[in-house]
Length: 158
Image 1 (cartoon, rainbow, N blue to C red):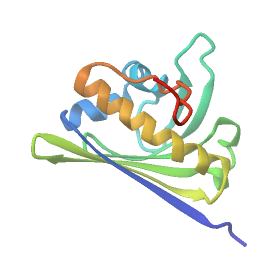
Image 2: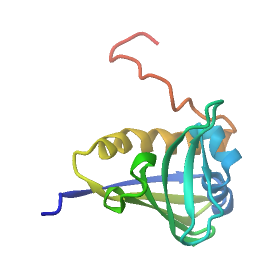
Image 3: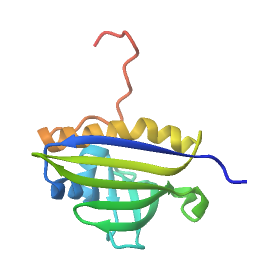
């Protein structure tokens, strides 16, 4: 019996070109600035990609394969914890769709094929909004947000 799957969809509008956004996702040195991780691959269909912590330890946190790539419009990758890379049943899928919208780009990130209630599903439901907010801030103001910051307690003074 297969486990129930869930999908998360995130949409943001960014004042940047599709090329700049695509580059921010796929160039390791750019992703490190707003994500705290580098996305490393040769970005060819079938190639492996790795999500490497941009610190002294350089730990590979996530890995997957490039499923589809059409720069600067679309990128589809499989997504798994590094320890689950060889178990294809543990892979989910992330699709980045970039569509020009007036003087902006509508970036839609769809993370699907996730096991409902899994640690991965819970983690990405918190992680993607923060990462995409940091991406938007970085591209629009040249200042990323700290994606590793601990949230303030409700009602706490700033």
